[in-house]
Length: 134
Image (cartoon, rainbow, N blue to C red; front, side, top):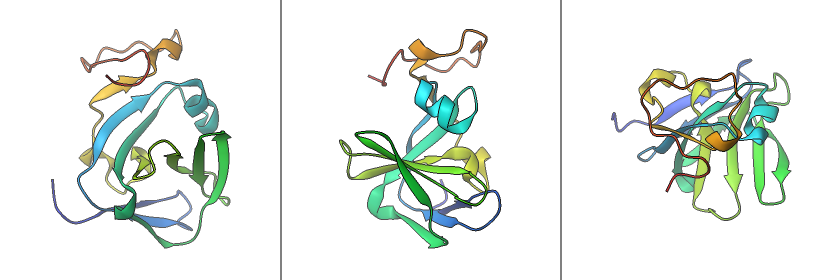
């Protein structure tokens, strides 16, 4: 992958970010919380080291989606941007489709498929994990 940082932001342009380091955990999450916070059947995410992520313009709103996790989003247009879990303080998950070029990071697996919607049928050949990847 290109060593330059990945760039992205919200739909309206109020928030922009850069994500450096080598991305990992490129996943589609099917958990009920991701579905409800995005209004979508699942959300594509990737992970980078927390110290390699920065907002370059604007500041997101944040909310605790669970006692252990915080999500950041644009208060103006609603775009969900990041997910941070207290159990993993050295990393941050970023919504893949908030990237300027999301095609650079296709998903490598599906997680939390135990709560996947029954009408979603996966036939992409990617590994699927009922909960977190093993």
